Length: 169
Image (cartoon, rainbow, N blue to C red; front, side, top):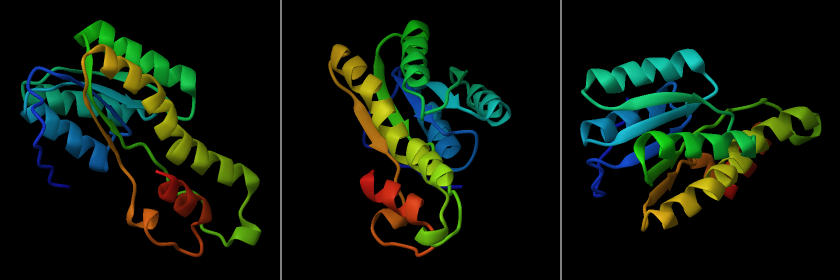
């Protein structure tokens, strides 16, 4: 599990985290909850998302799950709105949702696989921020963390879509 440290005051603030059914997203949500943030858990994985909510609540935190596909702008708009309705102004966001995709050289990579990885890993960050930024500006400001990867700095021959998306982030 990742270790998160924060220099941002999160106590009493509302944070939206995508892709937190497991891994980095879950770890970040729990860290934010320990510091007093209220969390909206947004993920396509209902089981993992609801488990994260239970873990946050087990720490004494407030959280609820919204099933949301980051590659769909309408679902991200709805996730942000649901969080604001529940917790008030949006202050924090961690755009973490991502998938690995196919392992293939460019010449063999399927167009469908390419679109899926780009849709979630790159478009998803844009769609999330598209609705997070105006909400944060209305609240007087906030903090956004966009999660990339080491493949945002280098390339891997059989991960062209993933590498392209993470470079974009």
